[in-house]
Length: 406
Image (cartoon, rainbow, N blue to C red; front, top):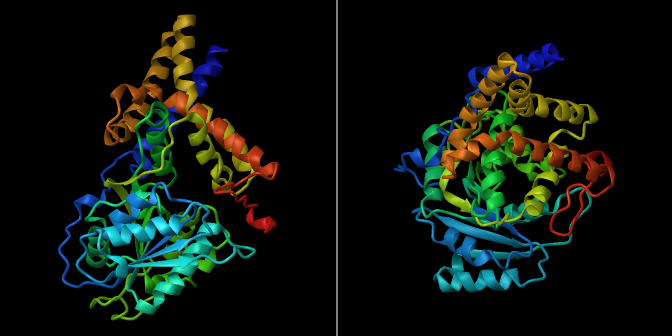
């Protein structure tokens, strides 16, 4: 038994060494939008599209932050009221008048959801169609629960123009206030970075593609090149699907397409963190975080039972074996197992610590990653069970089947 346990521990340790040394330095938090130089020689036209369904509680804060962006160029906001029943549109209109920018806000009453579309993407499609009359150089796709730092749009545009990017996205700072948020939310970001190492995403020669749906700036030319939002209309993880479509698309385009004297990039995207723009969405209980993860975890696995099995085996091997070996080694008096387990545990703690520090949580939480990973594994299993029971992808009163069943 001791030989088997030691073998599993050595395998886990090898995996961690490989992740730390050869997996795009995913654990680093150095890809941040706030380090961008914000001086602009040209001022592209930008239109924001905000899908909103029953967001009356959050829209006063999020929309105010959007309308008060310090971007000096032409900027309009298109809020698509996705058949809300809580007066979202009325609250939005009051906000625009309160900040003295009613002419900058355009409220669109969403049409009924057609077959084959997710609700959010159908709302985005309607917003883009309405915004197109302004012939924008860029669309800012953002959620109704995002509070934008006043300089967020300026930094996004500067990043796109200076580095000639088709798509710029930031994973906004998620709310991290309650006990459960502090325990589980930084890990959500950590696991996302492990799935999509930001340095690989930002490398034009690497096929890895991802984006964070809370704040995406996309060039109109790039969106048209991939065939518009409709090419991803069925996807639940729409941000990553959009980034993948853009990165794969390539194309030279027109020098004047974006209002700048450069040839548009060939599928070049960028993804990073933001320490200033933040999500207002509260996840103050285990249940709310559980539902958030379970909604799309099985989708992330492409609804594959084989990938699910690999996850259920791989997660314990990577995250649970080290602390278990520490305990077993101490009980058995086998210090080789205990020491190897401790080394593996310290390596994962070292990897997780930068994310814990970014979210300003207690450093001791970095040691809790094994327990957190166990909870996320259960969430993933529950996501698959919900899918098999026909309850997968539930959001805002809608349940979406897998694309194969649409």
